[in-house]
Length: 377
Image (cartoon, rainbow, N blue to C red):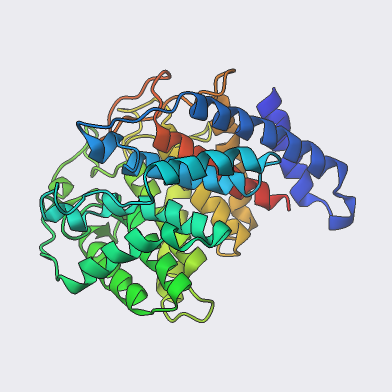
């Protein structure tokens, strides 16, 4: 009932003339603040990371945690008690010495290029925007400069991680290049980003379905119902990644039309694949084989669609899709703030259960919530 009232309030709020807002907007904002604070508090209280072993997925600066930090940073910028979250994020950055994974002495060469290892840069550069401390961007700039100075193996076979051969990479790395270009004014970062994005787009985008394959190992695979395999979270990564790129491009950038057109194409297609309850599933074209809701794909897609509404890339007809999605997302938050139904680390559709959670799912939830809050502002 609480979730329904929140969505109803948002619906009425956005239909009202500006002069009639006020109390309704305050009620909706207050309710969302409570939900977001509850989710953020639970995750902070239950946050852990590994100091040895599989640091790629579970280290303090792993891509998984980087997505959480990005979402937490967006929330910190809107929360009433913002200092609580900024203090926590600052502690994370300082503990990790604002470094980028894959230390040259300890990792194989291909890891230097790995898009996942750059995801932490989104967090660092966002913190730099807030604090303007040069040490927050040194390691990121050093890594990007090294990559650009050492041409990578551009073979698009999925086993090659020197370039962006899997669609998740379009969330992890491109916004880092775009953000550093914005900070430094150096267009070389944007040129490199765009060249590599285009390579991935041309290889993995299925224009007949307007969806991205996860990587080339899925080109000839089919779901149980005979449909192609298009992973929910994978396409959520792409939509959210494009939103983050667009948010960082200069207003007069000649690159914007390409990213705007691709964003709209993908948003239209994904909107049509939402289920009656507001969720997206692990498999986009065979939800019957994966009937459980899937939070990370739902949150990432919701974030992208809300961004599209806020930046006038999508018209008001998409508002009900976002409303239904937020209602769905609120429904999977336990009373203590735990976000459930998050598919574990993987590369393709898998079964999901309510008790499954993951930091990147929480980060995506916070990203979606903060973007929706802007709709009422």
